[in-house]
Image (tube, chains in turn brown, cyan):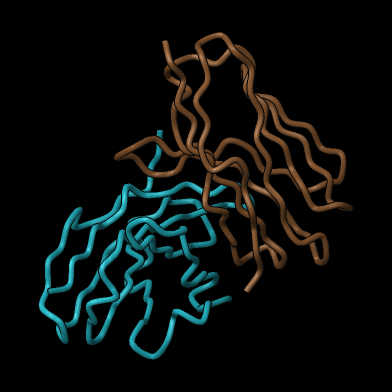
Length: 111
Length: 111
């Protein structure tokens, strides 16, 4: 079983603060790294898919970087807003077909 | 915007009964997946399906589980003889290439 680790497990930040969290994954046989946002009582929503070492993706105030050689990805949120409160999940694929999820980082943005 | 739909939203069944969970993936998508999340635990991959056959399955997906795409539209997960530990949220997802779109999930409770 492949291990995907996310840290921290939970995070509370003040509105307007910037924050980041980490996803670690096996660096061998890498295919893709996915980030999802999962709000309570909804289904996971895809944020980014990254496949190349050094990839950086951006969507509004949220961005992500990828290092496949050392097996980590960072997700950054600039100027956090209360609506950013959610669990952020990462998932790793090594075959392009089977996904291994981390346990998620639960973000709470305090107004 | 197209979305993945799942029915029923909730299902309660007796141990040993068969259940069928239904999903309608996004129409031009090629890969289909089932995941489950036991309360308080990680999202776990069950199975992926491509070109009308299983392409990958996890250790969880034993002989009690089966998937079908009976009519080119629905994608079903059948659990033949449910156990208490099958109680979980079951998510279907579909993708064209990399980004997965999740359905809202079916909460299964086995009594």
